[in-house]
Amino acid sequence: AAAQNQQLILLTHHNGLSMDGNTQLPLWNQVAAQLLALAGKQVIWYYGHEHVGAVYKPQTAGNVTILPRCCGHACIPWGTPSDLQGSSQVLWFEDEVLGPGSNYFVTNGFATLTLDGSSIQETFFNQSGQAHWNS
Image (cartoon, rainbow, N blue to C red; front, top):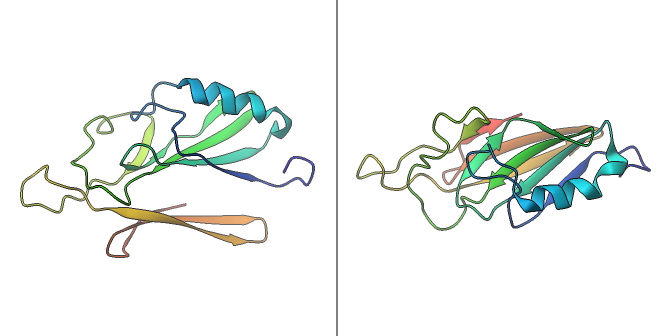
């Protein structure tokens, strides 16, 4: 990607950040060490180990801007992720409650990427196909 002046989209199962986005986990440093050639570039990092849908604020590692995303809300239903509420590192998270209670299950979902030349359109959808986040 660096040699071709391209943006990298990184997919891993495990997450590089704590669920609230405030703590870099050991995988973060392992991945960041492999991205040194992309200095000055952006990397979109999708992971899904945690069962939430979340978009985190950009973070810098070795002059590489990493855009962390958790897209793990496609399977097992989960209640409202209280770790994400009020976190200064979270731009968006799936919090639409299906019911019957106030913290029963939030909607499941998925993300899509539309690649058009050098632009990337990202959209997180809920299980009914409604867009809940895009950039």
